[in-house]
Image 1: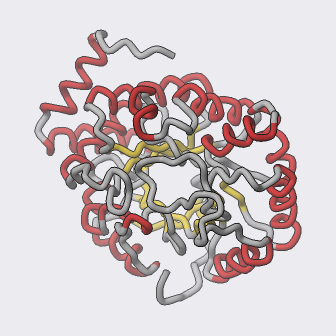
Image 2: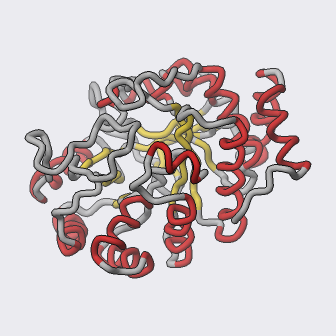
Length: 354
């Protein structure tokens, strides 16, 4: 897909993003939120991020988490350790794991397939795993088509695919900050293929990479285009670059107003993506609450474990009760959910912290 930035629609959205008063943007986004969710409910999920390896050859300039091959801090988690993490997650009411890792050239494809089978046999849980960038890496590394990679992972037990590694879906930006990773059409191609195979996925945007406002709007247009054809995106999540400890540490951090404007525009443009998450993990609980009036209907994850953003020194933490209190204090009914956004009626176990 080629996005024509000269159309009246594109120019209108760009002007809205750049010039509309903040509260006006919030009003428009809130109205769109209620079109999708005509109730006062805000959802969240209890899950756990499991980064199975931090060894990576992608060399993304914005990442503080990865380690190059043979680095003394590089690791690959054994199956048993992953199983322990899953059991800890399930013990507090967790209903899924988010399984992602680096582009590790030393792991054979059979390892990933065996991991899926091991989890389903010994620690059954919904596996939301392997970002589009990882799928593209597997395809090139193992000489398989993207369709074959997805098909085999799905047959082994993969349930859905997260939208990690989306950053900005404009090749000029990706070439500058993540040259070795999936480019725009490859990344979106994985999403479309997963949808064709009956899998649901999420989709993301990490902004603040030095891109223009027009680049961000183009990103949203590309997501909207795929959703109009497949309907396979369950949710959209955006957050700002966390530059500390990365090669982009001199890049200025964006502020809360930019986050709220970007979230609001996402809700306005992505008219067929039903759910938008509030990124309180990067923005804090207070901004996370405000985001619920700027288009978000979901409070994301308890984030029992988070390593990638934390490596850049910017992660906010909260207990389950603090999350629920933040939602209710913002005026909404709290509901736990599954990956497909269906509600869970059983109360979560009591626990102190995540």
